[in-house]
Image (cartoon, rainbow, N blue to C red; front, side, top):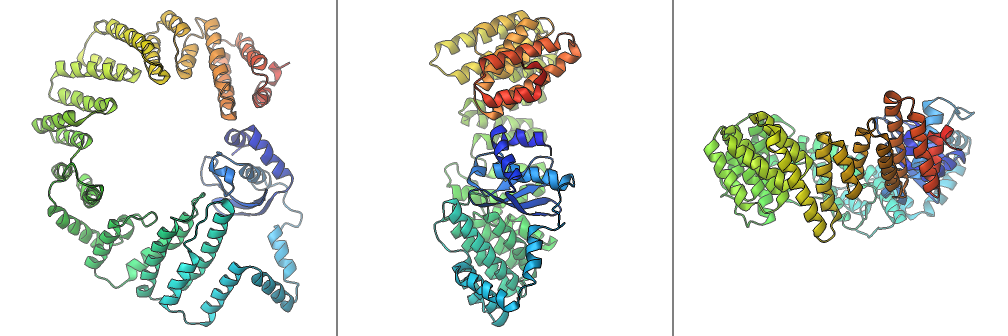
Length: 574
């Protein structure tokens, strides 16, 4: 992680605000563990921020509102900068060598015990939630709590109350995590026959609560992390037979959980339970009729759920016959039939593959889906050594898709079949020109027209017909990406045309008026500068300077862009 990484992720405006926070000492209570840095950052209120250290990407979480829609908020920037300075580089360690929390702790140890008790009691009395927590601590230490008591406390820890804004949600989870942590620690010491149903109830309550609380920051996952490992351990220890445990797993799979274990994998904790689970799934599966096309979602989900583990084992054993049998029983849509076509092709059952392909062709309705069916049709024709049919369907595939990647597939098949390029190149160019004309006559639909325009431009680039390509982009709308690639292609032979294209591309990009677009434009200029230094070192400064001056003159109102240019090209600016 570098300062440049932080700027790139946050943008200049947010970075500057975060830098101010860091300089003003807003980052407090910093702790570093093996894979994260945690801190409180004081903004309009105190926010909790965590920086991940175990990833190459800059990953920071903050519970402020801006973190929901910004890649990196100002509080995250502040923590990242402080971490870089204080910890990664080993500089600016507090003079005492201790954190503020440690210093406060040492000072409180000098207080008289009765004074500390008085202060703590005043704090507890003034805060209803703290009073509730401390009373629970007292009862757990001095009373024998029953399962009913603990169930009541689980209810109290997860109240069914609306919480939407950030302060309400943060208060809700602070309350829930504090109480639930004490409850599960108590459960750890109890018999699994008591622990397991209470943990299961905690999950049920959690799934009710999630309907009331707008979980902006995924805090429900923290509660899930607290419950999941304990539920798995209790499930392992509870004195049930394997058959009963399998029935429990299947019952939970029937439910619509928002938050729960990853079933069935999480509870298939022994090989005996795995075998019993597969056996029961097979028994239930064999009793099902073929799935009907008009079946309800619940019915389809049941078929999918029962077949999932059976299909997994069939794939692990490379049992194509079983995969085909399982898939055929629940095939109701074109993509199901297409999957069966591919499986039967792998099984070298080509007559059956053609039957499944015919069903897919009959039920497909959208062009994008037809492209997938055609691709399977082409592969099947090649496997059947039906060369003419393969070529015919590949041509249909290109006419339907009209993208350059589809043309590349046409070229690839032509080479495989030994066809001469001249047989189809002019036909393709004529067809694309006709499609461009059609696109211009249709009601405005810039997205569709650009697809066809980009395909024709990419076609010219592929065949290195630079003059045709440059003439085409003068009068037709092509994407920024294609025009930039063309500019790079003609940089050596047509430098003036390349610079004109770069001015277009950079101008349109920065006109998006956001820091990400400004950074993208500068990155392209830096990449161009590197290319020119290698290929045309004598012309590189003048060409880059022309682009910098163009942006400075035409886009001077964009202050953040000017700051980026000044950072990366300082010697080129007046």
